[in-house]
Length: 297
Figure 1 (cartoon, rainbow, N blue to C red):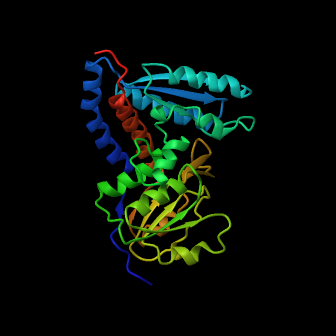
Figure 2 (figure 1 turned 135 degrees about the horizontal axis):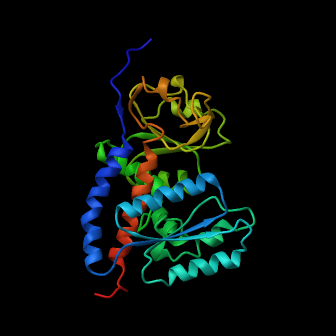
Figure 3 (figure 1 turned 90 degrees about the vertical axis):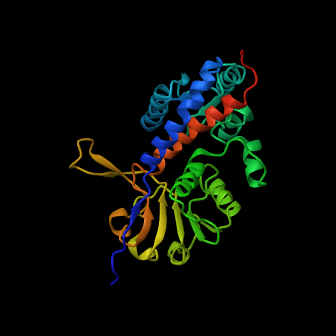
């Protein structure tokens, strides 16, 4: 047995509120220049989780006095109509950032649609040009919000990344791969595990930093990680909970209640990475507005 160490919560909610407060004077300055930051949101279909995420973003925009323009399209919309809607937002002088809420229906080509967004308004950081700049370690204005939020969270708590062994569980283009680049650029030794990895325990046992974004509830157990590990749990999963009036509760990829006894730092789910993703989107939209030169003084 081992002694339970004093664990610290990586409180994304608290950190996001501090970033929010730092954004307010920047937004006010833009409003005074007749350049209120604006986000165009494309929501396709009636996926409940997608609607929830969009509502969260709209709520934060309202709190920050930023403009939102929602385009809610039908599930069976054709790709031409989606791209035309994006082009209207690309050409709008009052919209500085555009997000396409994922996932998209199967009849739509996600890559084509994401690359229809102007790279100058790609505040989600998904455009091929912005991704390419990130992977080449060139100056890039917009980085995928969840990976950037993870890095900013570690930075706030003054957690060193350089010379650390970092393991990422999940290799998506949206989170795992861009996160790996951000870690490499900061001097970490990075291992990426995916569904083809034979034994994730073998990789996790020596990890100083663990980032899980695979979307499998409680896949990371207490005996998978070493003492003093730093864990950033990006996964959000529903599990049945008959004591909850909704019939379920949200948990991460990490078996939080048991793993927290070995971790030096750990994010909760919810309240960890989620708020950082939303506030990073706001931050990058404000940056897009500040970079914009097509407004009337």
